[in-house]
Length: 571
Ligand code: ATP
Ligand code: MG
Image 1 (cartoon, rainbow, N blue to C red):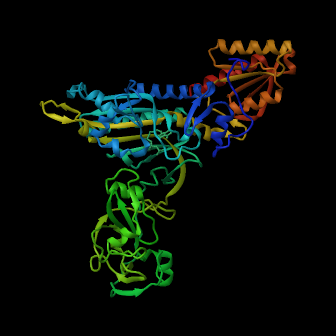
Image 2 (cartoon, rainbow, N blue to C red):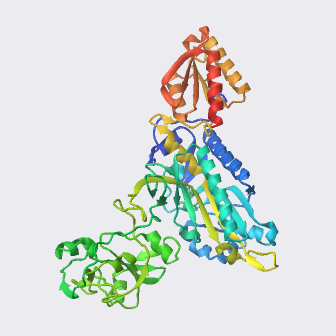
């Protein structure tokens, strides 16, 4: 492709809304353009990257035995009603009506749709296992679209769904997908970690997230240095360290004027924060719930959601009126003497003695309160947010923390969707059984931004060969110099004849403009044809190694280019 023809409107300045560098460079390098908040178009260079990622995903899915189909982006309301997700998905779902007032949504994901597709035709155990996928545009009306194409309202996702006879079958299908995902992200040359995930609104059992490591990532992960353990912070288990067991002392009510926070109580009573019980007064999907944890810790909302079996974002703080309605006073809630409320104790609370607890009235606390003797409640195994000094349960290893971008997510769904939609099959004995499902997503367009984030420098994005929009670029410094133009053309044709994807900068612009664009769009192999064209000498360099430039004959440059490209395509 000739740069005189290519639609590549590069920009000098960062767009105003760019919060991260990859976003700015993707816009400046003419890969993407924004049309509305969280809605983007892909220009020729950007779309070539998307298609290359899609193809890698496609190859690995096909190789793993999944079959590609394409369903509509428009999905009928009824199938979402059947699983309760029409309401539960909440405001993230784009809903629409046709001229007859029939309701639809723009698919944010497609568990219901795929299940509906197969359920009337998969009838026998002989038709299972089955794995289908599509690469399709998804729609989510995100609260905060941000970081360019990293979190958008319209994006390309590869979504796959597996259908099995039983949990063992599901486990097998799941592991096949797990391995296929490793191959995909290895081939995309992403630096990533696989972590145990929080199941969130999908419901179900096991899940893993594939996280591309990046400082600007919205996800936080906790892992062991030896690489044996990694989980999202939402999921990472906490083994709360308890000291020696103390003798129980006598319960006593004390005045604590205006001491509403743990900080204030612990300072005023000169007691360890850990022993001042923290109350979190909540409305969980309409139900009044108070959770108690040690005062030196934070509540992990995702763990609580999963304990309460609630979808994401259904938990709010109680209002002052609601706190009063459970027989308490805002800032002084304790587990002794509450009314009409569900009391949940993190297990650690039951292992501590002589606690300070709110007395459920203004400016009062109890000291020396003890579980069972003075208060009771249901016990949740682990509701704590992991922190820096925590060790990984069952080991002496400290957690390490990193940030990253979720590029893939795999779930064992179990029977939840099949039950809601009545997807059953007949087993060997003619007995009706429910189908076991898994779902598997790759954020195709998000991968573009994750790769960009990992491979950028101040001048642009040094794309890995496998996804680079073109393999090589020939820059002719003076396009109207006959020998330069001819030699450039010859090299360009030769590389194309070898089957490579090549750009030639045949524009009449100043060399500085050409060099800047070339660095910005980040084509891996560069051959510059300049002053020494008459001697058949060109400059050879790589985008990933800007400091090394070689002046060599055109044939040597061709040989080097060809070898380098082949090597890096086959990695
Ligand atoms: P997130 O936690 O980032 O909102 P998610 O867990 O809701 O994502 P999934 O339902 O697991 O997303 O979707 C599968 C994949 O689709 C994700 O791993 C991610 O790579 C991609 N994806 C999800 N939401 C978006 C979005 N708004 N923009 C771009 N890609 C997205
Ligand atoms: Mg996810």
